[in-house]
Amino acid sequence: MKNTTLAGIAVGTIAGGLLAVNVLDAAAPDVRSVIETARASIAVSLPAHCEIPCGIYDDHAEVERMRLDAMTMKKASAQIVALSKDVPVSSNGANLNTIARWAMIKEEHGRKLQHTVAWYFLTQRVKAPAAGSGDAAREKYHGQLAAFHRISVGAMKAAQDLDPAATDELLAAIDVIAPWYPAEKGAGAAITPEDHLALEEAGDVWRSRPGG
Image (cartoon, rainbow, N blue to C red; front, side, top):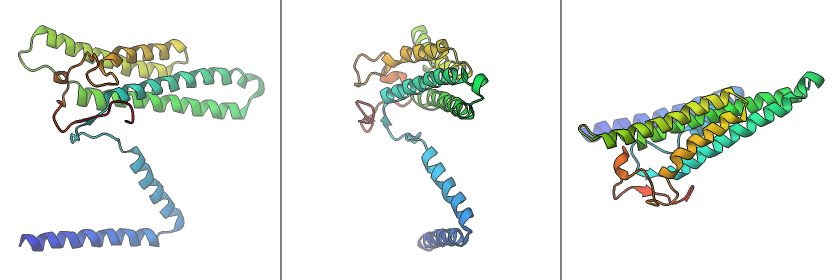
């Protein structure tokens, strides 16, 4: 009975896949283009890490990506200020277009920073102290929350403001948590495995450097 059921499911899945392909092939070229673009967009937007958990972590790389996001926002602000100087005089359409694109970049990288803080670090790497833990454990946990909250708020303010001080504050906030996650595992990290929601196990994989 089980084999029959499984076979039926397999046949149904294959038939559904073939039907989907046939529908796509039969669609008008412009419709096919939209569908294929949507598929590609979904594939690109899927995160590289997961919450299975897969046991693959590269905290230092995530910190460095946040630095790159912050530096990109800083560059975007500077470019918007520079390009804006010519707009009232020349009504330069190209400048206006580029300003709009830089503003979009600021928003995109600000969101990426907040996503990394919330989804990667706070969800997967920061662990609340167990019930009955002492004051030291609770204070350490609260310190982690405050530091990551500072980054998230800093990303919001850097996206809103063109003042270089806003992105400088964001970079300073990232600098606070950077020593917790050094490039080499165990190289003086202030955050220990016990502080992580995902504890280190024999099957965990740690990359020693970004992309390594």
